[in-house]
Image (cartoon, rainbow, N blue to C red; front, side, top):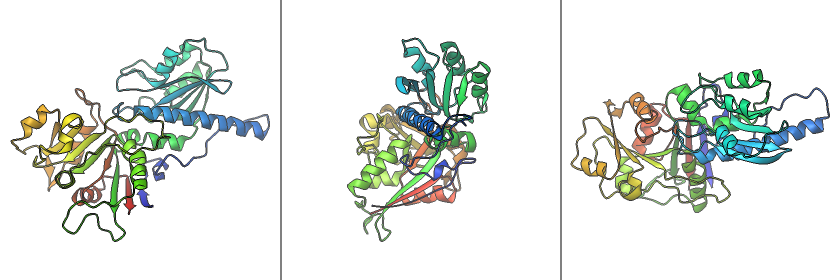
Length: 373
């Protein structure tokens, strides 16, 4: 299998150079004034192991938490995990609150709480997690990365330390940032994190000479793509011509069974300026229709619009400039929760050629992955 990949880094972060979360990064362990290097390394290894579990738990919220960050938490006693929690869905308890609420034992002084993101300090849809941590009696917290949200950014850590709680970190910060690259992208760029994915033959072709669909990738590549690309993004986007020509389902069918993640039905996005998507397309039928958003020109008219809406398809009306959608309006619509839509933080763009070029020309992307068959 040949894989070419490049990435443009997020401001202030080098984590986007990673393509999968398999690569382990170093951690910043708290300094030791006494004791041997052996115990320092052991402490760092334990922190790393528990933070990896936080990241695994956090992934369970993928596609369900909207524009909120992915967060997992574990509580340990003598290095044994005694409780776990994660942010399950937009508007529900944060990971720390879920863990503490379901833990039915007494907190002991040597228990340690691990969380991949700094606990929140502000009032949102739920009360501050810092208050609950303090009230619970937890005396030691290890975090993965600081929350860059202006409403938090270090204040959660400061509040815990002010209450006499030992706070250590960051631990595995690059992996933590990689996990929440979409959340970071919204804060720093005002748009979702965008990955362009393309499959091509060794001669550079992406279809047969007559334009029909061509099988390019191997089973191994398909499994890798679904496990580390499709399942790691909130939405999969294609142009309408790809739907007309290939009629893709845009689902996750091939997964590495070792990955600890329950995958929800992916959100499908279709760039369709003139609303010409066929009513026979798989993405607008059955359960897939309810997870499909068509992005159309605000002036587009179609006899099929009423039928699409009745099936549960959402249609976003976005103004166009010089033949392309107004990116800023589009990103605002896709990252603003409304009604039963909680927003998205990451998009995998799978084609076709015109769609890839529109993203590249406008520099509206962060990673470029090419699978060569």
